Length: 260
Image (cartoon, rainbow, N blue to C red; front, side, top):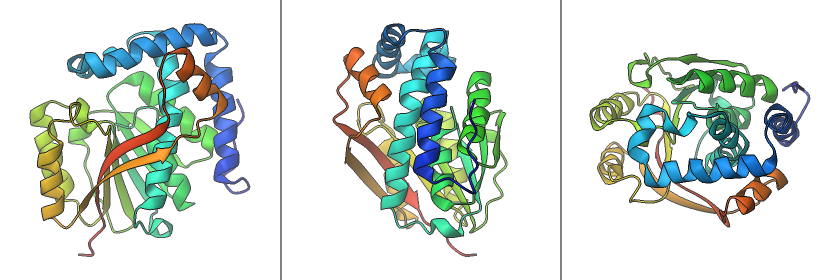
């Protein structure tokens, strides 16, 4: 697998090399059509059977894991990259990114690349996701490490030089765990906090409460629709799976760091 030296290659170069490495990593054992079928099943899990996500249903088979890595991971990377570029974030100041529920590491990696120097600390409960996140960091030339654990128990000691991201993770928590995280994140205001979730209100019924809490604390809520320019592999997988991503969409909650 090719690893890109972060000191000598642009973010776009590293993204291209990572996507090529994903093809090599997953299409050696699965054909694109098999991966597309798995992507259809995975998308159904997210939309129709979200109650099973906490059980790890989305990553329950090799096919679904491959589909997630080949499709959703790059989509989450690209979406986060565009969001971070659009928000009023002082990226050059950030030296550490906490990625809560990091999954394959793509969202935290996207933010880290925008800073040019930040180290990532990822945490996820799924062992495959942790392994994949560490592989993602290596491929993209990012300093960082993902570990297995409960994101609600991660000790946060953020500073004004830290960013905290939870991308597509808060929605998979139980109500009690979600309430715990809201309190912890709003008390971590010396760091920059970013929450990313699907744009559908039906999939995030808790969103309005979080939105009010962030706005009361001086944060902001946004909905994003970016014209989709998916790489070739991801575009082909989407078409074969019956998906039609004309836009990259997400909703976010954002709170800039407050100096103590």
